[in-house]
Image 1 (cartoon, rainbow, N blue to C red):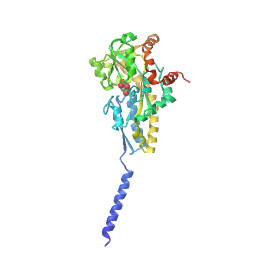
Image 2 (cartoon, rainbow, N blue to C red; image 1 turned 90 degrees about the vertical axis):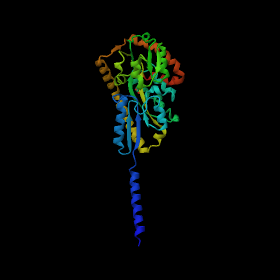
Image 3 (cartoon, protein in one colour; image 1 turned 180 degrees about the horizontal axis):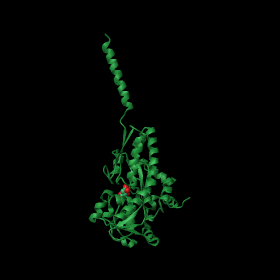
Image 4 (cartoon, rainbow, N blue to C red; image 1 turned 180 degrees about the vertical axis):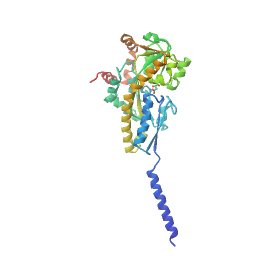
Length: 333
Ligand code: LMR
C-alpha cells in the first residue's frame, strides 16, 4: 500500500506550505527609538509621529517602540547603546556629538544664528548636509535635523548683564563649547545629564542652566528657578541618528519608505517647534513662579560680547569653513 509514503509526502507539502506562509509573515523589524525629553516637546512629538506613520505605511513589517524621558537610555549611555545595537534610533541634542564629529560643535557656538530660519538654511546647505554623513565611519548615520529652538538662561537670581552670572554654577550638556561659554562669563559650568537637572537645581548643586521653554516647562524647571532671561543666545536642535549597519541592512523598500516618513516628520516637527515653545513660555508665565526677563538690544549685545571669545577657541576643531557657512546662513538669499 502506498499510504505511508503518500501521507509523508502530503505532510511534507503541508509543512513546507506553512513554512513559506511563515516566511511571508515574518516578525516585524523592531525599531527602538529612545530619547531623554518629555512627550509634549518637539522631539517627543516627532518620535510619536514617526512611530505612527512608519507603522501605518509599513504594516506588519516595522514596529517602532518609543522610550521618552530617559526611560530606556539616558545621556551618557545612549550613543554606546546605539553602537551596540541595543537601540536603533536616537535624536540627541547637537551638543552631544563632540566625541564623534568635532564639526558638529558649530551648533553650540553662542550667538551664531540670528533665528531658526538661518538654522534651516545652514542645515539644508552643503556643510549642514555633510555633517549628517560625517560619522558613518564610526557607525552612526544622521537621518535628519529636528528643531527645538533657541536657548534661554535660568537662575536663582536675575541675570540682566553678563557679570550677574559670575560665580554661579550652571548645568551644561556634555559639551566643551558650552563649558567654555560659561567660563567666559566667569561662571562655573557643571556637566550633568538631562534627567538630573531638576534635582540639581532643587538641591543647589547648580544655580542655573540654559534650555528651551519646552524643555523647561515639561521638566517643571520653573518650580526651582525664580528667574528666566530670554537671551536666545544659542540653539537646541537634534540630529536623528541610527546605527549605520542596521540601516544599511534593512530591506531596500523598507529603508526607502522610512526615509520618506522621516522627511515628512521632520517638516512637521520643524513647523510645530516654535508653537510648542511659545505655549510652554506662556504656561511658565501663567504659573507665576518665575520672572521672565527680556533683554534690551544693548544688554543682549553685552552677552554676545562676553561669550564671543569661545568662537576663536573652537575654530580649529570645527573648521573655519563650517563656521563661515553657518554665519552666511544668517543672510537670506
Ligand atoms: C539637554 O540635555 O539639556 C537637552 O538637550 C535635552 C534634549 O534632548 O532636548
